Amino acid sequence: MIFFTFSEILKTILITSKSNGKNTGWVKQEVIVNSIFSFLNIPGKKDEEFYINISDCSKYFNSKKNIPKKIKKYLANQEHSILLENFSQRILQNAEIPFKEIAQNLHQRIESSSSTPPPDFFDKLHLIQKNELNFFYEHEKYAHYLASTILFSLLHIPNIPSNEPQNTTLVETLHLDQDIEEAVQNGRYYHSYERDIIIYPDFKNRQFRVCVKRFFTSQFPNPVHKNKDNFQINFFYSTPTLRNNIHFVSLIINHTNYSDEIKIVDEDLDTEKYKFPYKRTMVVEKIFPAELYHVEFQTNYFTNFPIRFGSFRLQAPAKHFKVTVRIRTNEKRKLCLTLKNFGSYNKRFSNIDKIEPNSTMSYFENIDWTYPSSGYAYIVKPWNEYWYDFLPQIQKSTDD
Image (cartoon, rainbow, N blue to C red; front, top):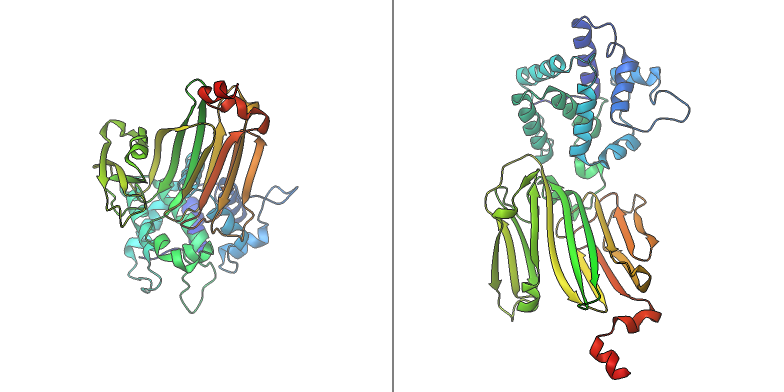
């Protein structure tokens, strides 16, 4: 299978548009290039209508200019599935673009080509792209086919010919450390991982109810596990009481609600070998296969006053990692929240470490890569002057 350079795609677009009798739309070099960049929301220069001038558009067409690194980084930092969908919709909404014919011409060139990239070039990333294109074409999603082809060329295919094949992989584009290269190339990573922790203080019963919502996108239902036909997540605890305190709420994968199909399995491990031997597994045995899985998973648990400490560590790399912790109560003035992130992440980019609009909401966001074993810790406690209000009633009466 061949992979098109940006130049080859641009020329196919131009030839196809003109052969379809188009007089407007994608019939000029500068219009095609700037339209693509506009559809992708690539930031333009101030006070200029187009990001790319006519001269540079010609260079893109004639394989004399590579895609700038800042544009690659901008595209790489977007959530791929969302970027692809938005790009496809912009193409679909433009009646002047013969996207079906363009996609068919590109596909015909691929099918008629006998060339195959060298083995070191044809890695897992390119196999994923091949499968994605085949899926779009078989289902007549021609706008998605064209959008996917363009995105792949912008991110991974050098536009200037070279005597030696260049393996510009996802790993190189995003500056990943070598120790997680294999996980990324095998697709066992989070394209995006978000946790939303909502803490509900119950003053009457002297306990916190903690709601944990997880939103993640991956090529696996859970990249921590190799299975693609089922969803599985494990929890480990130091006591059976703590294990029984975790309550399943809901599971939605690719807009399908699997909440009624969840199975909960408890297992007691060897207490001499495991620090947290009480295991609880939540699993759905059969899920619909997909190229990409969008997962929404929610649990609840309860914990006692007056202090709540929580922590979490990633078990797989995450391209985008965001955590929000918030306290929901009418007594906000009595509680304070501190949230810290820790571990290894790509420091080539300026990450948002912590934002605290008020004392009961905080979040951090790593906009590039966050590596396994990285995570967060937070603590909720009363302000000093309100400690007395949070003590158990029996202790308060004794003190009186």
